[in-house]
Structure formats: structure tokens, C-alpha cells
Picture 1 (tube, helix red, strand yellow):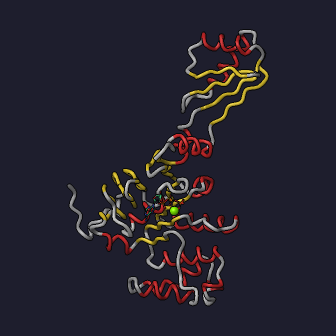
Picture 2 (cartoon, protein in one colour):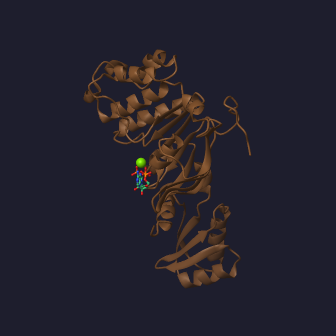
Amino acid sequence: MSVTTSDEALSDSYALETHGLIKRFGASTAVDGVDLRVPRGSAFGYLGPNGAGKTTLIRVLLGLTRADGGSMSLLGYSVPRHRDQALVRVGAIVDEPRFSGHLTGRQNLQILAAAREPEAPGRIDASLERVGLSHRANDRVSKYSMGMRQRLGVASCLLGDPQLLILDEPMNGLDPAGMQDMRAMIRSFVAEGRTVVLSSHLLDEIERTCDAVAIVDHGKVIRQGPIAELLAGTPLELQVECSTPPHALALLKETNLDAAISVNDGGLTLVFAANTNREVIAEVNRVLVEGGVSVYRLQADQASLESWFLEVTSRLGGPE
Ligand SMILES: Nc1ncnc2c1ncn2[C@@H]1O[C@H](COP(=O)(O)OP(=O)(O)OP(=O)(O)O)[C@@H](O)[C@H]1O
Ligand SMILES: [Mg+2]
């Protein structure tokens, strides 16, 4: 058992770590044995369809609801035991950021800053500037667009000079330009050495914004790692258009190619294991041509993260 004292947060530890985290609502399990390791100074996406348990995980991390099992740490502090120390350097938005509409953006930040450390009020101007809201800071929040509220939410996160930002669906309600701004803002936080954990159901946004991802479905993390590594783990599919598909199949079966082969109208489909060297494509071509088969077209596809995401989430999406 590790014993952590209040000022003993380890600088080389993960920004966020969970082990076997569980949260149940009655008979259903919204967070089901989640293990996460988020390296410091990275953008990490928690990606899953609606109802996958993203918001619930964030609520558990922040202590807004209690875990039913497992353990977790934020910035090296074990929580809930040392939650107060950890949260000093955490900025978070859960669901939609909520503000008082009859107050201005700046007044809302003043109230939030007053509840934080003594340095927080001095960070208000820089935070507004950072999210591009300085020129609207003295307007009432009720007049803000959705995108401006999201920005104000990020500004409120910055009041504590956070080492870790946890953003629940930060792209929600943003138009394409707003999404681009949010993405650039997130990357600029990472460039400063901060860690950003964001949840999303938008694969495309995660792919563009994050260094690593955990894919979650029905409360369970089904894959986790650097995006490039996850993509390398997808099968290689080769479409072959050729004459005499049955003959082509027979020729390929005589070789020791490690592929699942099926015959279709105009040719064959071969599926190779992940990490297969693309030399196999040339090998297939050679075997067929030398065996007297005319090859009209060869097309190799690595599944896109999108098709793979849809496949893994729906494959596991059986009855609850
Ligand atoms: N307070 C609650 N009481 C009962 N069930 C809940 C509660 N909060 C969430 N759930 C259930 O937990 C599951 C996960 O919900 P959660 O809001 O965490 O999903 P999500 O991934 O954030 O979804 P979305 O993309 O729609 O925001 C859902 O089945 C939901 O109905
Ligand atoms: Mg949610």
C-alpha cells in the first residue's frame, strides 16, 4: 500500500490515473472497471457514444459523485483522500458551463475567483484575453452565444493556473470556426506543459486534437493508447479485381499467406492481421500474375479510426 502525504505529489506521475474505477446507478454500471493513465503534458480524449459514461467518469473524478469501487489519483494526489490539494491545480467543465446570465462575464469570473486561492482574481484579465473574450467581458452572459459561454467556461478553468484541465464535451454547440479555435486553445495549453483531458463523442475532433485516446462503451474502456498506435493495430484489407477469382483463390491458398480470403463478384478480398508488412501486396500480385491471372486493380485500406471506432463500439454494444 502506498502512503501519500499532502505535499508528496510525484512530479513524474501521471496527470490522471485510475484503477478499476466503478460507478453504479442501481442495476446499471455507468463506469465499469476503468483503468486510465494520462501522461502529463498531453491531450487525452475520452471517446464514446451517448450514454457511454463519459460525464459520469468526470463527475467521479471531481468528487461530484462517489465511486463504488477502484482508486484514482489526480496530479499524483490520491483522491478522494487528497482531493482538496489536487483540485487547486485542476480546472474543469462538467456538462455545460453554468453562469449567472444577469451578470457580466467578468463578474462571473470574479465570483468564481473569490472562491479560489488569493492569486486567482489577478488572473481574470489574462484568462479572458486567452479565450478571446476581452472585448465582451463587460456584457451580460445572457447575451453570450453558446460558443462564448464555452470560452467563458475555459476562462474559469484558467483562474487556478491549472496543471490539469478536464473538459466535458468542449466542442458541443460550437460552429466549425469555434471548434477550430477550441482545438487551437487546447493545443496551446498542452504546449505550455498542461494536461488536457476531454470527453467527446466526435471521433474526428479527438483525432485532430488529442495525442492519445481511450475508447469507452457501456462504461468500459475497450482500447487505450496513442492514436497512431491504435491505428496501426487495425487490420489491413486488400481488394483484388482480377480474372477467374476461383482460380486466383486456389493459387493464393497454395502459398503460406496469413490472410482470410473471400471471393466476390469481380475478384477477392484479403484481410491481413494488424501490422502486416505491405510487401504482402506485391507478393499477392506476383503469385496471381505468375499463375496466369489478370490483375486489374489492387487496393489496400487500413481501416480509418472512424470505421474502427464504429465497429468496436457496436460489436460490444449488446444488451445491457
Ligand atoms: N444520476 C443518474 N442516475 C441514474 N443513472 C444515471 C445518472 N447519471 C447517468 N446515468 C446513466 O449512466 C449512463 C452514463 O451516462 P453519462 O451521462 O455518463 O454518459 P455520457 O457518455 O456522458 O453521455 P453523453 O454523450 O450523452 O453526454 C447512462 O446510462 C445514464 O443513463
Ligand atoms: Mg455526457
